[in-house]
Length: 401
Image 1 (tube, rainbow, N blue to C red):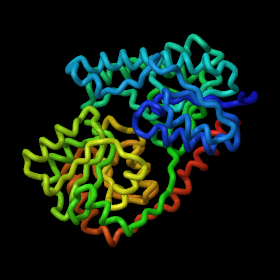
Image 2 (image 1 turned 120 degrees about the horizontal axis):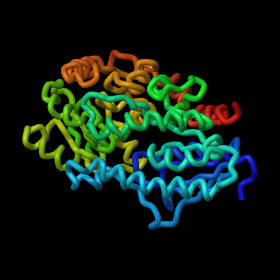
Image 3 (image 1 turned 30 degrees about the vertical axis):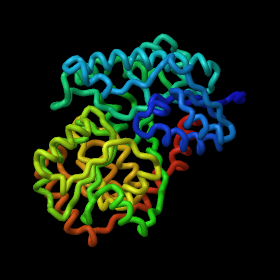
Image 4 (image 1 turned 135 degrees about the vertical axis):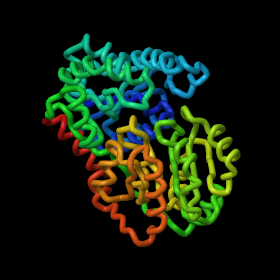
């Protein structure tokens, strides 16, 4: 039993095989539990439960298996034109059950923090429960509530409609959190919030000194020829600019080899491989189409010269691959959009090109490749300010204000 004064954390990503939510939550719990008793609620996950149970001062709970499930967009690709509304409805229904179970499981917490949440179901649940809402902090991973050119009409309409209810939700809540000052400012403008309602929390990261002795062995293991390696890592999604990078990669210096490493999203590995084979680029592009363990991620990042983050205009949030690049001290080639652009510029950890300008992408990539051994990239300040410990201190500061 957790004593009075506890903090209850809720996560949709953790336990649901989405991104690296388990890693994020496990590290957050480790550092927060040193300062405050914690209760955690996620999708059922034996691995996550075992990891968190090793820490003192933490109670882990999840709904019964079968009552809720993680909803992934890729599961609805078969519905073609109607996939987004059908996916959205299924997602909201599932997550309403999740958030309802969270508050019922921990009714007496001092503070609640939704580390990530589905907008529609959260508005429906919390607007009718003002006492709970007042003690709740809302974790926003994006702030794109305006009409964005190039994004689907369905998504634009959904985000635009939510502006008023989300304004009211944040206004009546304990506060909101984002992973950067760019997102904070954008959220304040789009939802018309006072600046004291939104707080910035570092993304959090480990920092690992990779052993270069096995670099060549790892490169050979994944079938990558000797070259300067550009790594495009993570779930294959259209908003990450994957298709455009493929289309323009033949213009990138032939000194480079592109390694695409990730599981299917709304872009599939089969689509990528078909394009590579059709354009006879298999000697310059390698696809490893699956999820990766922590040890496998270390292997892949060990022989990457640059991490490529070519996200498009409607992805203004922070990036998991960017966090991993910092973790492994690998410079990036990234679009200058949103929090990604602001972060790379602030810490001088790579090269930026104009978002969705693919000639700019080719030019900046070639400059980076040509000057790989002369540019100086310093990760020390970035790693200090974005450590898990620094992140946990900021969490506690918010609750104590």
